[in-house]
Picture 1: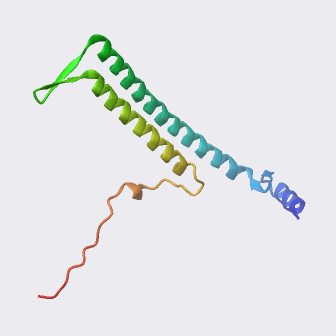
Picture 2: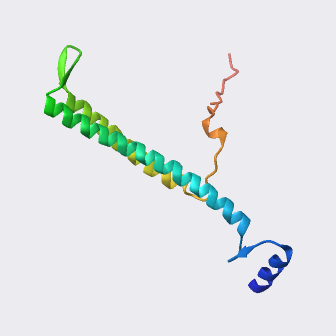
Picture 3: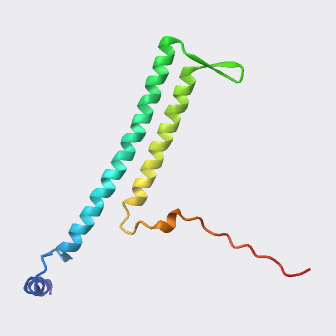
Amino acid sequence: MDIINILSSTIVGNEYLGGVNMKRQSNVQAVEREKIVSIMLLFITSILIIVLGVSFSIFSVVNNISFRVLSSQVHGAIFGLVIIFLGVRYFLSVRKLKSEVYKTTSKFSWNNFKKKDKKKTYSNSR
């Protein structure tokens, strides 16, 4: 039965590969490539944030840098640790996003960025 499908699609002019239309497969691959590049840029950004936090912490320890915050001195390494924490948190968020984006059912929609109206129910009793 599969040979008949291959032959009929060849006669019609569609390329056929393992039960999948080649045109449809190339569109899926193009979307996947865009997803991969986007996710990789997010990973690179998160790793860059972590590296900057580590370098700021080391720089602050070596040069004994501190900042005045609300009339108290806070060492610069503490700010570096906060930056490292935020970078690690961002890295974990990108990993979670990657698993959601790579699903075959995921699609882009502008509706994801719109605020959802919360319908309030008012009682008409006075």
